[in-house]
Length: 139
Image (cartoon, rainbow, N blue to C red; front, side):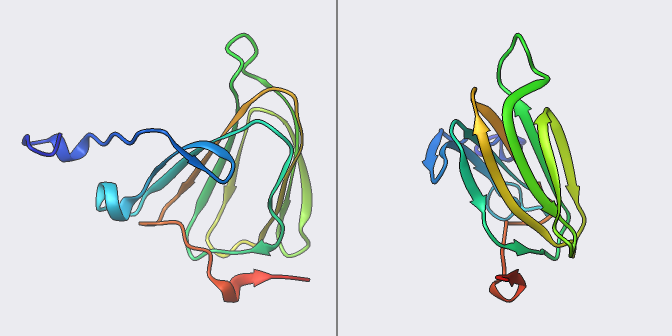
């Protein structure tokens, strides 16, 4: 669509197969020339997505969404995410959004039970998602 006046604002990517299954990834750096990146990941089975706590220099938003059109509230899954230096565990069982401000330590992130596919929407206020090695906490 880039061959029209406003075509650069309409971005289409085909579905890719990533580490967790089908995914769409749109980056500010490549797709929008902006400080916004979003990833859509379909989760279909239990998985430890992030083992180690870490932080970023940008704000991040995680949205856990049910894909069952007849029951979009219940995830039919048990998810745990650690937040803060204490890695305070939050249990997620229903469609939920988690805001992680720049600098906040977060993770582990584990999908403990997944009975029906769910969608993880991962958005960052950054031109691309970066996890710097010196900000990973392996204790």
